[in-house]
Length: 129
Length: 204
Image (cartoon, rainbow over all chains, first blue to last red; front, side):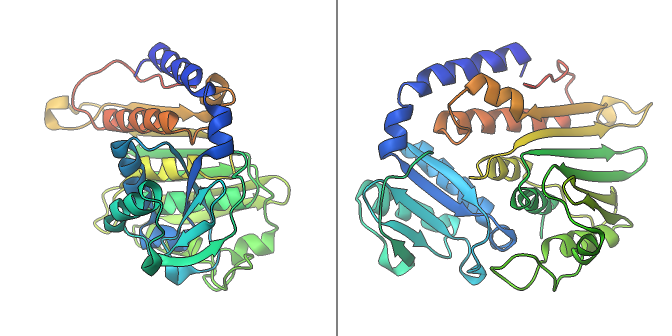
């Protein structure tokens, strides 16, 4: 991809994105994936790939980020879903084939998937994305 | 780990844990010398000599969340069984450099694998750091494209330049993620392309 084309594309993205940046920061959805050694070995990269693909396929606006190991290595891949005003939910042993149902139930229907939950924390604003 | 790209992501994550704000990742596939070299350099907090030595012990870790540190020992073993090795150079306050070498054609050498998802996972980490990425394939003189050998090719990525263009928009924005996936996929694919193409000049 020639350099000039890359720069132009990034500038267009910036123009389009900066308009909704404040809204996204205050009310947006964040999907956080554990990516420590244990997560990587358990397949967290593939889970991340499946989540990004599913969000793009469904046109869902959410930021995907990664974090290190939290010490629950046997439960990896771990996926947290954080939405302003709702409890932060940690799902455990999340493999790519679970992702479509996870997105459908939690992000679209607003239902936690209880059999996959490891923990919940009280919800607040999600802060900076 | 089944792919070297998983080891690479693991070492990159170590750099973030060490507080690095700048990381340099270089992959050199020297087909003539039959050598693969992976080089990760960071500006994190670094380690003293004793800790750097013990970093290759699978039962040693400075983390508080667990009692083992398998990442570097696994990479060292993967390199060793491919007629290569691993070195860790570090100084407190000056950062760490991890260099892993492999005989490129060794039967036991795991494939580089999915570098795109490894780079993306690193770039999406909540602890942000700039990445200078350089992946080079050095072909052998005299080999023709028809024989299936690649010419010298390089793919470069520098997030400092990308962030400068994006301003306040984070790399985790969905449109930026989509752009990064396409940019990295095209850049990596060009390294093994049999078709002559315009020399790659990635952003940065």
